[in-house]
Image (cartoon, rainbow, N blue to C red; front, side):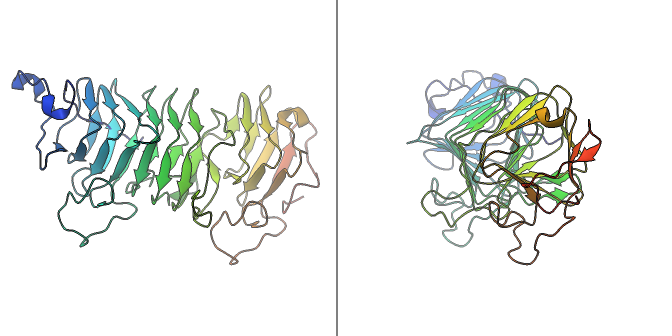
Amino acid sequence: MKKLLFSLVICSITFFSCENNDDENNDNTIQETTGDNVVIIENDIEEFTTWSGDSIYIIKIYDFYVNNTLQIESGTIIKFHPNDGPYLMIGSSGTIVAEGTADAPIIFTSYKDDEHGGDQNGDENTTLPAPKDWGYINTNSNNGSQFEYCEFYYGGSSTYNATLTIYGDNISVTNCSFINNDGSYTSNAGDIGVLDASDAGTGTIIQNNIFYNNKRPLSISTAFDIDDSNIFHNPDDPSQINEYNGIFVETINEIEAPRSWEETEVPFVIHDNQFIIRTGASLSLANNVVLKFKSGSQLRLDDELSSISNYNGTDVYFTSYKDDTKKGDTNGDGNTTSPADNDWEGIYNNTTSDYETWSNILYDSY
């Protein structure tokens, strides 16, 4: 799986008041200052470390591993060097606690981004930031990291094109913004968003985040609930959305416990030949929730209608990925494709051994 991590230095208050009494005990973090508040990170983090909110940290290590707790204060700016610092992996026993505030968010961005923290690469407007300038942050199967009031810009240069990958249990991403990132990866196995929670485990919390000007905003597993608190457009300019505006359900092709999906701004996209709600499990849908299915996909109910609660709720639909009339142009191709019968398999009732024919099932094979 994907991996990322951060390097540490023990500081009393700020980087410049570091308790560096014994250089031999600090070999794992080499830092150079290129300005009054700029810190160069060139080695992994092996001890508990705090990054100060009055500093700008330039990641210049490929890959950068956080093997202990990295605590990031509100107002901290982290920039990834395009050649030497594209990835941040959480390694053995590593955790990131990034707790910003509404007034002083934590920024993760490109080395070329002069808008946040100034012109560290010293070329004025010669180079401009763009999606895929740096890779991604990956929790790498470690539990308990927290991202609150963080802003992520210009990431996604990696195999999976994600900017933040959640892989582990009890990880929270709340009140964060994902703007101008990539999220373009797709394959027969599915689609990956800039916030990739397709391997996220139990206890995952994704709430009150903002996504716009990305390719795909969010991909999820079936191990946690999704409420209606996330926003998939620019609150100041609703015309700025994401190219493929949806929540992409990936990796695990079945629901094995009671699960709730409540997002109503964008649809949930199913990319699986057989997406199963197992015996004893259930999926509860809020009113106005839409599920879109890619070609060949099927929803299978192991426990008849008790498998899916509120399947006939107000404005609940099960439809084709090409259907732009329900929650917009999720496949991002304008009018190039139109929905038609047989676009997807349908909803199969495993108890009756037959397909459902509800009036809110559109463009399936039955």
